Image (tube, rainbow, N blue to C red; front, side, top):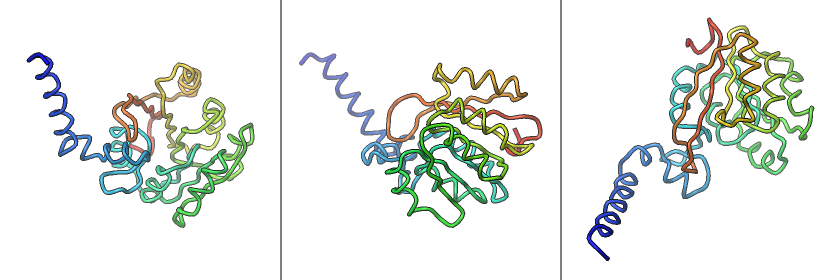
Length: 209
């Protein structure tokens, strides 16, 4: 092995070791989430499967006075439940629904709905309006369009994986409805891919942005 290759291998290994010991990925719990294949923090507590910068941004702005709806449930449901007054989630995967439901606190609810128009209609069927709507499940274009009817006057909509080209119509719809956008990107639990989440908001919104 020549000296250049030795240095390369040493520096690569040293960099990985340093990150695992006390770097950003260690502190956020990324290595643990990667190993366990679930969205958890350094201590094993559930976190959203969303970019770390976005979760930090939103967490600082939440309060028990807020009502939240989520298309697609998971560890994030458990995390948000500890930071808002009430959260309702909609899930189409029956096995995943059965796994998450028993873990929910009293202020959280997951509603099962099949893959189809019933799915996005779930938010309207609750008969409530929400300060925050997170679009992170199936049928995202349909879900985002329907959710507009269920937002409070100061409500915001959040779209995960917003870098995907198939979600461009959502951006156009939200702009037409008078919303501005804030795009937040960065590392996320479990995988090592780029993640982007977009917040759609209007003046006087509940997040103060």
